Image (cartoon, rainbow, N blue to C red; front, side, top):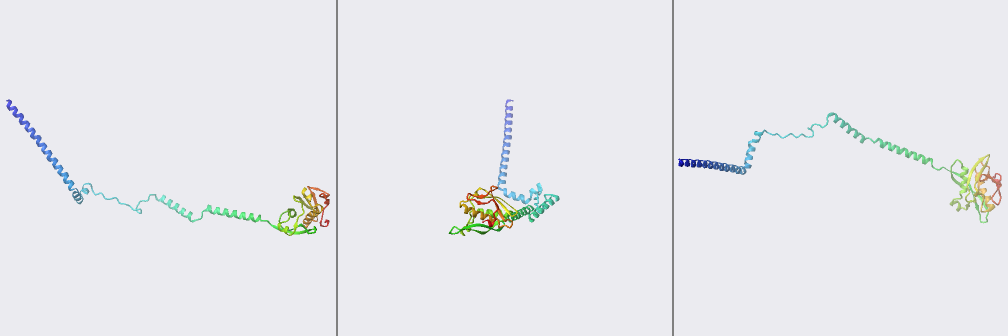
Length: 269
């Protein structure tokens, strides 16, 4: 009985071993087949790919994928609606019109500049000095010391007080050209005409203190008065001249005593 059981167990072991050996052999065969298939696939990859493309297997399995149509700019749908596109066209037209037409602000600026230039021109023309010819008197002294009063025509600015303008020209002295001709003024330096009025043919002339004192004594005072009287009486409204010093009438001019207590005319000299 023991021998029979032992033999049965041995048979079971052998059968189990054989079963496992067959399974291992089958696995090895399967593995060899897979390796062979992989090798064949690697070796024949390009040919298989070409065959598949020719047979259009991909299109049959997944359907044909048609490329998406590419629309040109002319076929593309407009981005803006018709209203917005019209507004855009209108804006573009206005921009082109503004570029074609002169800028209003620039035109106004140019007109303003032109007006300003015109105004400045008018002002400059109005400011032009109008000169008139006036006779003024200066002295000449010869080699012997003899003094004469000579008339000189001066171009003097036109004013509302032409007599004062002429007298101020005398007080200012001779020009360089007049000095070359031997003319000179005997009116004391620093003399000023403070005011002048004309009434009933008498010109009342008010001078400052400097007019009273002449360095050339009596003769100098005499001819300085002559310069003033002759220049003032060139005007048709003036017949004689009353001299005032600082607004006051004096009997005599200077320390030498030239009489100025009454109006002087050309006959007074």
